[in-house]
Image (cartoon, rainbow, N blue to C red; front, side):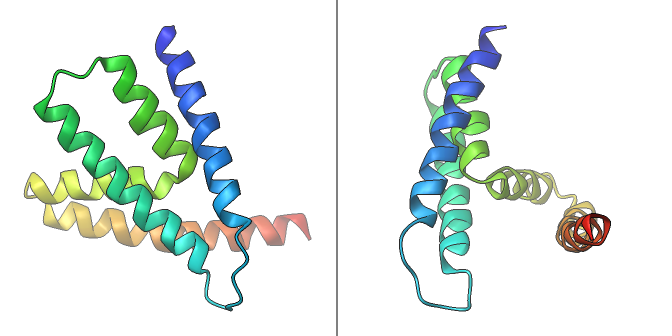
Length: 118
């Protein structure tokens, strides 16, 4: 049950951080803020995973940082970590399928959601 609390605390912090970054003025048709958030989130979750693997980090702390903070900041970081794990395990086909289905499925999901709301 404490795991939920740590994830919630980290998730709240990640969501607030994402919102704060999205408030930085940027004059571009290209979604620069989201791109930077996604790339930084992927870098952060990779660093946390690598660091936690080398050091004896308590499980609740990794839940707070990886699942909570990174997940609240950007779920793209989790997607990137899962794709990397498939790559590392040699599951190249599954990795490609996961990336393809995630990106295309998500864009179609947004379109369907907009259509349903219309």
